[in-house]
Length: 333
Image 1: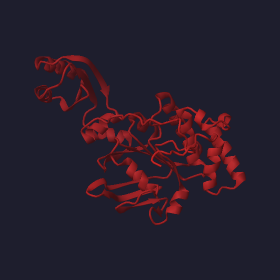
Image 2 (image 1 turned 60 degrees about the vertical axis):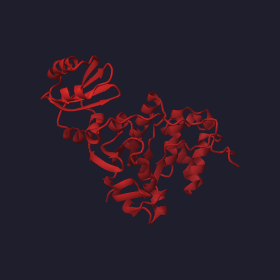
Image 3 (image 1 turned 90 degrees about the vertical axis):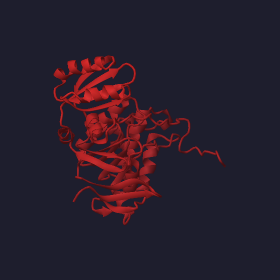
Image 4 (image 1 turned 120 degrees about the vertical axis):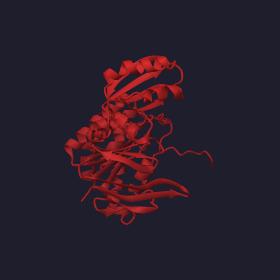
């Protein structure tokens, strides 16, 4: 039995299809990544799996329990860390954890032991009696993860868990998730648009684009699908015209070329040999290269291969730290 199994999930909003027959399965104890830009369908899929949204058609099961038929059973099995920070800023870390544990009817003795253990593991035990309003963004995110684990779920679902965090805080969260998996048998479903995050954490990765799974495999398996090994990135002064792109495509060692954000990304057979020829083509076509980089394939190159465009790291959503969950907002009343 798979921890998560999704078969032909479709979600329609009128004539718009947010999900177009999505299918995949996740093994028990696996960290599975769902990679795609905003609007690809990641959050819609997560909302269906967490019982917050009904699919138009298709089927999903969590540890054998069908979503939509036994939502109470599903909710007992899963821990969820959403994009938004949900902890009450006007309560302490300990109080937030205790309230969340009560939602699952955990006995007082069990609550205390579990909360103390989790706060220790996420590095917040010394700050447990401080208001969450005094926490940094990284600390709040760690508290969110601890909340999601308080009832000992079999499956942890994280929707963009590090969005809005600085790189240092992001790596702290990654290390935390890695250590948690070592200590517990935990299945993780992670959605992200950060390439490095997916590479660091996930054993298998599915790429979703426009509501469809376009590829799914291990990172190495995905890389093997790409026919070339070297990527040459060249920053061009001005705009790369169609003539320049066609001239570069005519070179025998070039397999594909994309121009985006002022940068030519060229897949070639042998980067070291190709660079002089590429620069010559650029110059004879009237262009000028301002910088050049030769690199091996990354997950971003895999994404470009399957979708035809680079993924963009969207601006992080801004969180208003001045408004806590416990402060009623009177706008519109």
